[in-house]
Image (cartoon, rainbow, N blue to C red; front, side, top):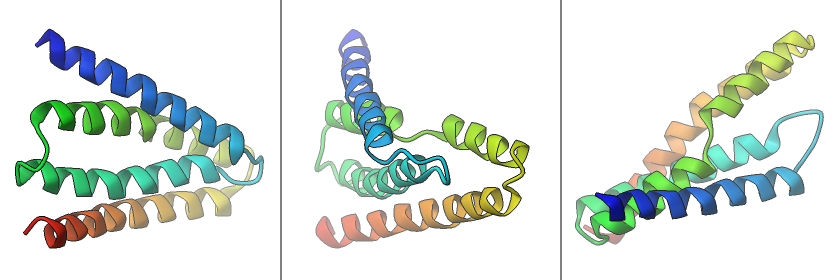
Length: 123
């Protein structure tokens, strides 16, 4: 159990750092591109990882490090939620609805594409 917690903690530190760096590199006041990007990328990668884990291509430890740790800290529902509320609060209603629509449509779609990719790679 302690080993699993350590793997998640190390992965979480890596994922949070990657998310922070993407936020710095793609920072903009007009639209939360960095949060949308990390959630899209993370959805695809978690779809692939889920299939890899279900086919025993990766161990439980690797799944915890990559999925729960890195991707769990890399992606962010809470930041998405706060950014959406901020856009509404600042009167950017169209942008807020666009952000919600893009996130709710493309994150599951990319998770599915990752899943399909994984299934084709590990039949």
